[in-house]
Image (cartoon, rainbow, N blue to C red; front, side, top):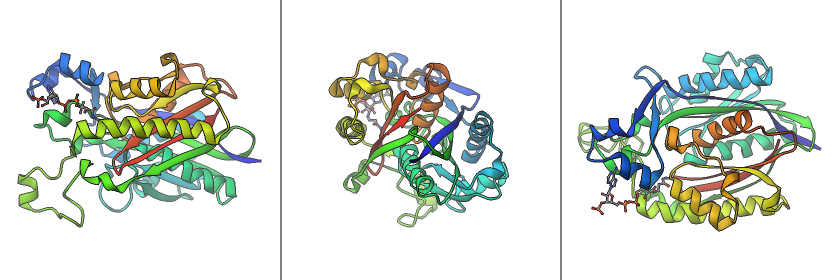
Length: 326
Ligand code: COA
């Protein structure tokens, strides 16, 4: 049986750290509120001259090195992002040139915070069908560039980063197992970036009205995030005929510690199995689960055959979970 096995992972976080006391000087907020309401203590911010593809490049190099694979061997390159370098060409094509992945077929995938899981599920199909043998999936974001640094409701939440995984078609029982995905476009107005697309093109007014920044009705998103992640987390376990006892680590999207705790409680997973890095990085959208996977693999002593679950929720709304047999 052919599977898409993850043969290498990598991540990259920009050097600049923005902590909660820095934010106290920018907007009317305080460390106590941010930590108690979100769990976030600091986040990374890309340099002015760093685009999403630059973060993606560093994460990709690390993933390729850990897999022992050369850029020229990549046949499929998918970048999950909502903060592309530009609307077109795709960040995947820009990354292809920087990486020297000459042979790769490249495209971007936008599923917001669920992007890495959607991309894994997409690449899994190509590899299992035999269309391609070697793929690189990168989830990279520079959310700091679309964050309204005057809006305390959102600016405390987000950060920049990138994670990458190299996958190969192999005859094995290991790899990306059954995936559960879900989308609901009825809530697009709760979380979006209004201007800069074809609906509201950029004008002096859109800039003045701060419409090129991420907008979120956090309170309403919170409830749906918990419900959707619980459903996705449980469905992925069910479609793979597993129980929660089989799962070694759950790597959830990191939007809010209270969301993660509520999800863990409702699905009945002991909190020791749940991975957290939100205190260091905040919400990095698609990059969150990709960076989480790399950190779990490298720091938590994941062994051959261990079962991991990634689960996420994001703008769209999108939601999903995937099981990986390591
Ligand atoms: N510092 C201090 N006070 C703040 C603040 C900040 N950074 N941000 C908001 N507040 C205030 C609000 O103005 C409000 O004040 P009011 O009661 O006087 O109006 C109060 O805190 C409570 O706001 P509320 O929005 O109800 O807080 P909350 O407990 O829902 O927490 C979020 C806000 C954004 C942290 C939370 O709703 C959340 O995490 N939402 C979901 C995030 C998510 O899942 N994102 C996308 C998925 S990827």
